[in-house]
Image 1 (cartoon, helix red, strand yellow):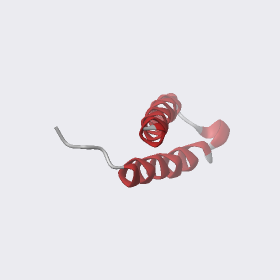
Image 2 (cartoon, rainbow, N blue to C red):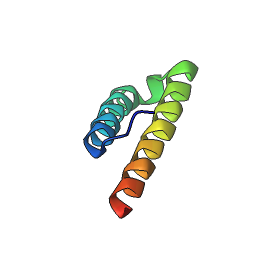
Image 3 (cartoon, rainbow, N blue to C red):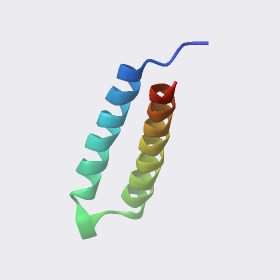
Length: 58
């Protein structure tokens, strides 16, 4: 099993932030698929940040 590095998680969270920002810029013009994708990206970002927080506590 590959060990997760804090820098990898930080990079992943940042990439997800950028993708979320790009989708959210569409505002009221977002399609239902865009809204669903944004929600999924936000869940993934939260999971990455939770993992990062867990690494920092140890």
